[in-house]
Length: 113
Length: 112
Image 1 (spheres, rainbow over the protein chains, first blue to last red):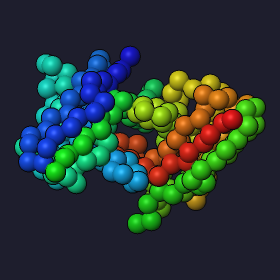
Image 2 (cartoon, one colour; image 1 turned 60 degrees about the vertical axis):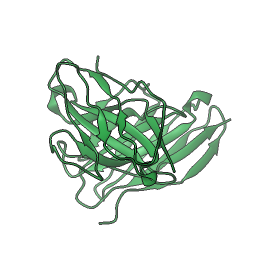
Image 3 (cartoon, rainbow over the protein chains, first blue to last red; image 1 turned 180 degrees about the horizontal axis):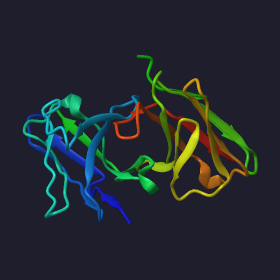
């Protein structure tokens, strides 16, 4: 069965320091991975998806199929990056009828001044 | 773009009761999914509806059921509530089955 693991519940860094939020997955099919972010008192929102290969708010994530990882990185953390981050794996439902997201447990990022 | 709205925002129910949670999707979003997020955990997939039919279900018992309506609104119904049903329930919609999802703010259900 598919699974997403985020080993760190909490990651605390100082402003300007590099950030790496870890995500590992297990899935027998071709993975489609996402990072979602939830800022304080706001709804869950899409940060980036591996297919897009884009950088959003300075964050990037590279899919490493060999290590089954999709770590989220930012070279210089900002205080406004403090939030809850969820890694998610999108898989097809039965008979290719649709798709669902399997989420990791989330990592709370705290960026200290 | 009106986004995804959920109601109510908070709800307290007694064990054994039934509850209906509502979601209003963005216009044109034919796919709606419901997720349960227990405290300190990531969201878990309950089921998905596409054009008013259920097309996938996660590991949830039949007492969790849903409906989707032609006006892009949907419902999540839970019968015979249990204490462990206490969680944040999220609705997420998408214009089609292959696109990314827009999430609502959720309904926090407390079962006492």
